[in-house]
Length: 222
Image (cartoon, rainbow, N blue to C red):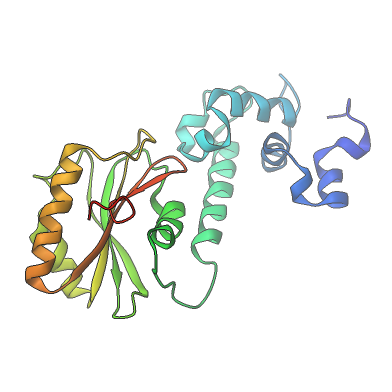
């Protein structure tokens, strides 16, 4: 990055103006550290972001997915994936107090950094106490899901073992579109009915997409 004036180099900008002054490419360049024979770190970062559709796409990548980019070897791929995971964990562990789920937006805010943007569909439940404070999240199934694969008995067995008074059902759509399928609608109906019989309230079913979510409660369908 010798062609840039000192004040425009990412490291100097970070020191002088803070992280908010840096673009996504400059932050990635700092994680990479050094360039390659084909270009400096900023050039490599630009190519990497372009190849994966920007930062959101990069956050969905595994280390092996990055190796096709010029200037990215196993060590740098590991650095990038580790940096993204650190950011994700920082969002997940933001406070000592247990989060209370009062609205569908609360549930989405809790679940999105943990399970949104995954490349594999996952189905799970958020276990809540009597005051709807989070006990923990549990993944019950992964892969291509439909209403016949996820059984209410498995959901409520996990909820009962975990001591939950209520649950939020959730799953992600790797396509990025959180709109429910007919199977999602049918599964929600079955879980609502089973919850009434068992005495564990299903307060919502949240579908996570790419930066968006669908709440059956919010839409008036749960």
